Amino acid sequence: MFAHIQKADKGLAAIERGLVIALTAAIACIMVAQVFMRYFFSAPIFWAEEISVQLLVFATLFGLSLLVHHGQLVTIDFLPQALRPRARHALLAVLGLVMLGLFAFVCWLGLDWVSRPEVRVELGATTQLPRWYNYSVLPAAMAVMAWHQFAAILRDARAALTGAIK
Image 1 (cartoon, helix red, strand yellow):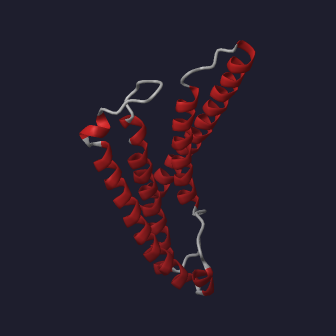
Image 2 (tube, one colour):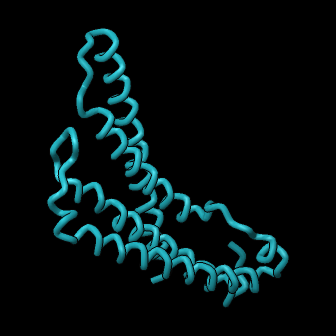
Image 3 (cartoon, helix red, strand yellow):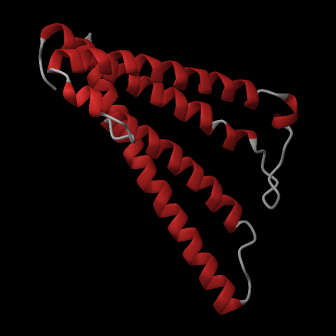
């Protein structure tokens, strides 16, 4: 079961990486087209900024999720580094549970927010598209972060119990 969870975690991270690359490329293309249209044809693309900001938020949230997967979030790690490997992994598993709780809580808050009627009827300023689909990225990204954190907790708990060093 452990191997399947870790394999699924790596697969999800690979999908996220591709998504972040595609989103970043889309932002670059839209903004280059916007500059080209604005300065060469005096006909700016009216929706370019709104869509680019939305894509930037998507890329940022899923990029953060990739940082969770790789364990590269900014941390203060002087205490874990001072401990022996088994104790370090035990502490990291406990701290991971706190982070998992935080991700789950923010995911729940995001789902509650997106499901509110006043949010469901909100439209974008230039595109007139419903904004709830943008806002849904927050709980989706938090759920994926929670999954990555769960897989990390399992790795740390296993290392703490077996003495294996990751």
